[in-house]
Image 1 (cartoon, helix red, strand yellow):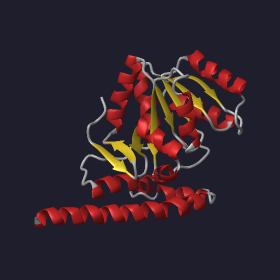
Image 2: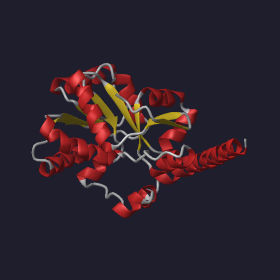
Image 3: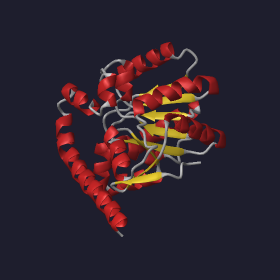
Image 4: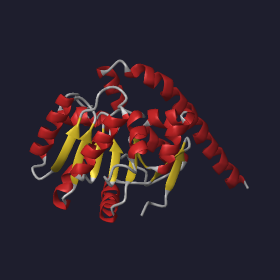
Length: 259
């Protein structure tokens, strides 16, 4: 059952979730053998959805988590939420792999370069000796032919994973999952962006203190200057909406108090 407390941030709905709540929800999905998409959103994907109707529809039909702290700040300041918290992709992935050892959860990794996946699997098996990784695949950096797509579906389904972890970058991974959600039998299908690179050791993640104060995006920018264009296009839009909605909520509260 989803939490009843939900926040709409720029048209994207976010239920109030914790890591533990996600683990319990995933267990229910696996037991009921039902398929679900999880979108782990940050400022970039939320702002992109404003002009991308397909992505917005996906967000509105999926389980959303707040990957970026600015989204948590929005919920706390605009909605005065006391329960909103960050549930980011790399951390959620680790918790599922760890918790799943005792549950028999089966995992499949899709996306990234082959050497990244090989190192990812080796690292996760060392870190979690009882983890059940049933397969992984590095697709080509181009659109698949119908025949290749069918073969990939068969490859994944043959391993009967409970979790399909997709690292194709946003919003490509979200759109890929949405297009295949009814064809792939994994109960939990998630796009996790750069998590494969982080956990394989190919890219260093920001220090914990930067993660806690909302500066992980800046650390990533220092590592990859290509992200500058993304941040320049989406961050100002988010800030504008944040300030507008915050002032609107404050004004509305003051008006009610006056009345």
